[in-house]
Image 1: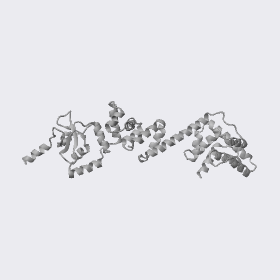
Image 2: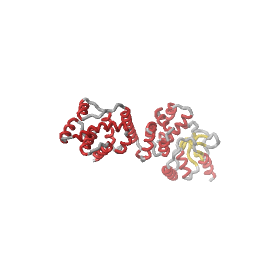
Image 3: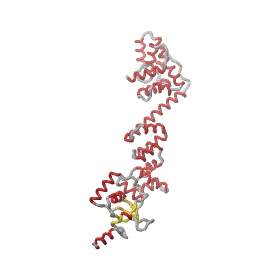
Image 4: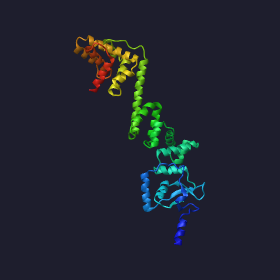
Length: 354
């Protein structure tokens, strides 16, 4: 028995030189600067049960604690350390590595894929704050400078994106980077999109689709705004004049705006009432002047069949874009006494819904 006790005491003593030995868990503390902060509870519980059955097969790495002689700080192996304590062990196999650095901790966890994006970002942030360049940080952990830059972009995130990232609902650093770029140009639209999107739906491809939608939407808005600034607006033309312009390849600002409205209605991105609210008085006047020509032609029509036939042949009543509005205005002239732009837009919308 005395011999066994002596052996037990020896096992709780760390060697003076680099080597593996049993060190008392009471003499070991975790590294406060360890990059890894998140430990999966289920995985840790499984490791605890394994250690109860089999013990710790792979030693952890520690270094001497300069603030408290006789104790040690974990370099690597925090999960094994925690699981050993949970399993009721008194000591753990360990070896001393005085040359172990924070970069080594990051590299080892990266190789094991054990670090979250948040933990990598935090480490890079600390290194940047210490005055290190992206190139230097990248070399120290075996990654490129662009890898470091990508993660560094997540150091200062807008609140809605930071909430997603910090909660762990979105860990794809490239997706975070793309969201941040979108936020710079379309902050309100992005906040609304994130508000009504499920975390699992916020993927790289969905973010790309949303960005393209925003760019398309705002490009069209710019076109409409530019049309508003153009003057003078075209005067009311009769059908013959419009046919001549079409033959010459002419496309008036009013025609462009009608196509813009048609696309919005067809894609269901706008309701007729929304269109009317968005149109300026100048825009309403511009397209009203154009459509009134067809409305008047409908009122004066003597042979409905021939009028429609000739207009279809000339392309005035095509099935898309401005042609749909022209045809609707013409029939309103045939059937109604007063011109009403909002009713024409509503009618085109209803026809598209059929």
